[in-house]
Length: 206
Image (tube, rainbow, N blue to C red):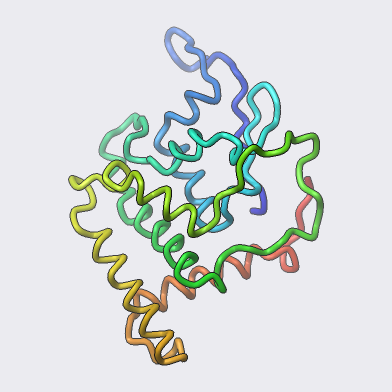
């Protein structure tokens, strides 16, 4: 997808007993909702992410929103056991973001050519997040984003493997000769996602 839109106007959740109010804040509090935002950011950055509550605005203009969206494990889950299922997913998303920071050639920096995007959106107050900025944001909140009780030392091991693979690939100047299968797999996945999401291969209507 080229765009991410969270449609979260204030409303009553009729399935709750009694019905409770839901809005953009309750959307952001949910762990699964945070995960879907991080998944988009890890591949595309935040430039084409929007939220509609009472009006349409870019998520990159809401710094707190971006900060909370990567804090999946401190979000609300109906079933706490779901957190254990997300460890591999979050590690994978983080790996894609690390790859984009280590090697800008595979970052999703492409420009859309199939439309101008949603109209009547206020000018953003801060620049959108891309790979390196996302990594910096995660580093600032590392302990919260990757709680030890769920991740142990997996994040340290992933970072070490990817950084080693990047150095080795640069020294050899031939990715195919790198012995780091983790790095090769992550870089290939990153390239594949960018390729399949390219406007030249997909059409969009906004």
